[in-house]
Length: 578
Image (cartoon, rainbow, N blue to C red; front, side):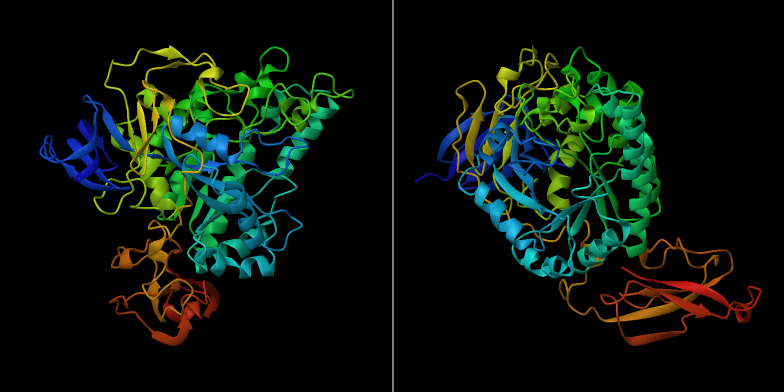
């Protein structure tokens, strides 16, 4: 009887915390040992893989993937099924997909949406998978289903600030954020100003500017910048964590960084198209530019790309996802060319299905670029997605006894001959790649899913099978766990301590780690804490009957004059907190 099913030797093991020469041991579906080189030499092993000095990273987690969705942009239909999309994923080193389960505006339920999406994925996938609920109709009934979604292993959802078929107004967004906060759900937001986009589109149409390149003009960076700032404000008001998806503009990224520096729970995602493409990819001869149409679009220049790279390096971005949203190119019925009609013989940018394929190229693009330290690469592509969406440490880590044996073995430096990518090399069900002709210096040599080799580039290529992927239940994200007390999600959370303070007091520092960011010079303010009472002399009282899960914020009348700040009465606000 063997001690281990798989041992990987002579590797450089990379996590989000460190890089070390080590061997990995796998038993069944789990990592069971990470040891010094040679640690498992005396063991009985079914299979040994020699990494030959190459990086070994946790399996990639792509947390922004669209598969088998109903039409959103005219007649465009997703080119990839759960089977073909997950097949493509494992060939590029991604072992877990988090795919959207889209609710329609006309639907009053989220659970039925989840059930139908499960049916599409079950027994079809090459990779493991989970879901985000895409909320288009946050009705009272839909919001009441949040506890049931949590029980079903769903801990994240997405909402839109644009697209008529999906857009929520600010009041609806606040409803979703409050319900999500109460139940430990991470909210993802597509932030673009819809009215600005519609206005720009109208201006272009009046001038008969219909070519694909004008898609970028109709979605200016300012649409993303404004909506990003507004989303941050709404998040701050409710004190609810959010993830701003597919950020393309350095100016929007700057808003996010400023919010993070103030201690707000704002996370951000970007995608390879904003690191490797520009708006000039939409301005190719004929209709070729339609291949790069996505929203937000790639931005102006390499300078914009550099701004996004800087955001990766300085911590603005929590994750890098693909936003894999595949449509056929040379197809007039369900693909990109559905917009070519008798009325618009050269097409119309407004009707081009928005989205590009990228699930297979995400990790190789980043690894080939060579700009990210290996720990940062793992953080952005595997560890942080696992933490953000409640999959850690089962996914995104090498914790013996806890982590699934999902891993990628790369090529040793200089051992893989560089090549120029052609679409026929890929394993998606799409007739193009926006990265055609791009030079790659790295590609996964092996992909291992729960202990089984599913991709062996040098000996068989795709060796996994459809149906071996399983659904991964998600728990509450550790990145938002601090907002939820130990008693449990959705339960009464104990009394709130009220503290009346002068916000410019030099003695406050960071009370209980809370950034005191709401102060106006010398105005007394009531703060509320749901943890232990802060030891501050100016504490004026405690209301035992007020529960921190039942109230977020409340306007409190304070007589400013009696506190020595001048003037008569004043309206002060309290923070009903974390």
